[in-house]
Length: 302
Image (cartoon, rainbow, N blue to C red):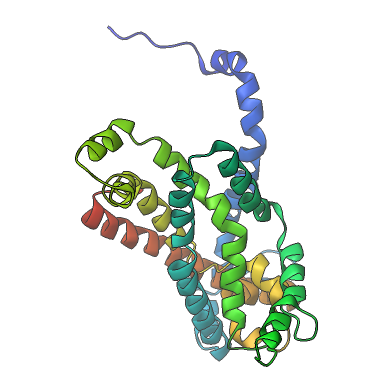
């Protein structure tokens, strides 16, 4: 015969320090992630200064999809996000594998501290660093290029290079910190698997290929699926700090478009429609990538 446990409030009084520690995070998610769900109905309304709003159905989406600017920013978002998935996502995996091969504890700790540091810098600071490094007149990159006989390039205004600046700066900022999850997965691998591989004559590279990589496949699959959910985001903070009048046509993304619609022009309904479109596509990408991952690797988010 099953007996019911203590009442909920008794548990709360017993574990209140832990609930207190959880409260700020829960409050943050409630305000910024759950309350906006209700306000998403604004995408189907005509916003009025004095409520109530007027229900207009899909009119805002029709206006949005008839705008050539929307398709331009959508194309920019897809290109930048695809570049980040292709060139940024694998780097933390490689970094974690390399860090795991460093046997000297102090050396590994020093390298980890150095590569984790950029994560704690804001995009305002990082943008300033890259603008200084890539300056066509006195930037270190162009000075080195000129010493090798190349002509200086203004990377921050060149529409052919600015997307690569986004990719490189994202790698510099996030590769070290994101490798933590993969390192944790590597440390959780049973050491006996390495011993067995060594007894079979496997060298270091073979251990990585046949033991380490298969051991972190669930982590890779999960993080890839979560990244696909953010595919249409392309990092507003990064882009808005590196955007200027010259490169805007190349790196203007959905988030900056929503930002302008909502805060600059006051088109709250259109901005909400664009944001809802991005959220729905993100959810669909999560579902599709989860099913593909389950079929290929047997692992998914759930």
